[in-house]
Image 1 (cartoon, rainbow, N blue to C red):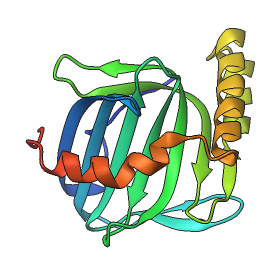
Image 2: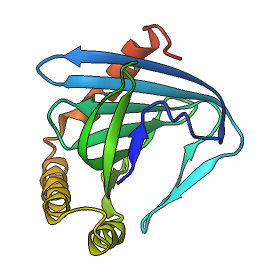
Image 3: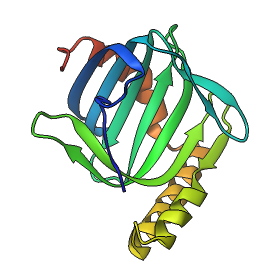
Image 4: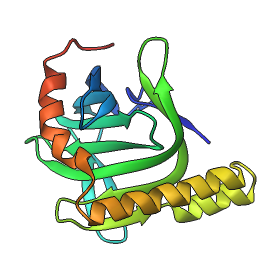
Length: 182
């Protein structure tokens, strides 16, 4: 299982970035939200699924990430240079938290969900989850958690009950008005 940091310190593709982070408490969302502004990148990054090929990293793109309190997922809204969402990406995770410097992190459970602005939903990396279980990188409980969480989220999404999609533009603007975190 790998731990992923919201500010992506290891990502060599990013040449110049800004990072914003804040903790929100509201009826709709409680938890950390971060914004990673990719001002200049070495080269674009294209994500391929069975349904689409989408550019998710390029100059002036941004990633808004939500870490909902007491949930086993984190969601990233990926914006192009015009501020339009190109896709939502949901990481199923064992847990998430923050470093002593308040940089959110997640312990990735391999399974992911991608949702496109057209409404298409796709479950990704099921084979990675199976392989991690087969080599005892994750336990049976962690495997089962990933499956049940992904099923619950896909149902919420298909029934239009997943509220984070509706918060993206507002939280992106709010984060841009906070102090940049190094």
